[in-house]
Length: 441
Image (cartoon, rainbow, N blue to C red; front, side, top):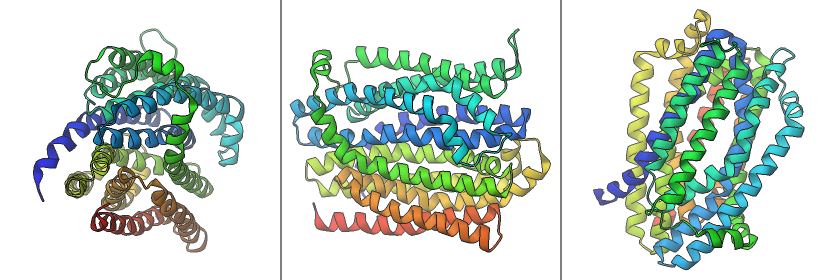
């Protein structure tokens, strides 16, 4: 394996990693503060985050097509075509974010009701949603800015954007959740309001950097954005819709798991949310490596450079496995202290050790899926990932129902179903990458 692909991989990935870790610290702060106020807040967050991030991730996933096409155009030195796609991306993702806002405005309560939120948890979900909803209006700005920075191989601003937003969010969480500095204690509503204020401050900073930076060579001119037709974005969406549907299926599968967990007990979804939150600390790191992988394999595909494609994949896989191994060590050594960050309930803390271990073992398969999947997307075949996710969603829901309803394994059954799903899809997707390399495009 040649290491000359490690530097460009890290150049893109490290700033995204730092930004994502900062973002996850922000989200974990919400969980930690709220979990110590009322354990039921964790169940409310488990329901809310699963549903809300399903729609938000779909919006981001639709931009994957633009990222793939722009990266391939950069590799092929077709910069005029880059602007056609980037300008259309900026204009029409912002229109899409308005539709997301309207969806949650009119159908929020229906979504949580269909998810099986109890009469106690449902009002908490709605309280959080009402104060969180303005964020949907700026999702388009965030999504398009990230694509432009990523395809320009200039992701350092994402660190500052995330750092300011997260530090402000932690401070506002402390003030608004607990009622400090003369403010009333708002509980879960305070957590949502703190997130919304912080998000808007971060978007302002990101927008200033986006407009003023001279390093964003894929950034479109304002005149091009104003005149941008829908057609290039529609072509990108046609490619990205596979990733959006893939993410939608994954999130729908996760929502189904939450429904199954809600049928076990009121706190089951909260326990799953806590363990999932710890896992996300590593997944966002691996996801950032995956984003860099997609950009660089896209450039390799455009340049018809199979050696670069293979080298990027192998280096990315090595990095992601190393991250998973570090998390495994932490969970083996100090599982209790990690969970105690989110709750003071000793019964919950004592039962989460096994779930943490299963989560860590699952990270290795998930790492392989993320890296292989982004390599396949960079190659220009997101439809493959959509097909494997269809099978995976059916598989994980079926296994969870079997383990919980038939075998009576409770929460453990859900974690085992997730582990099996990731393991099988990892094997299938890795074999697909090997086929791509052997075909040499």
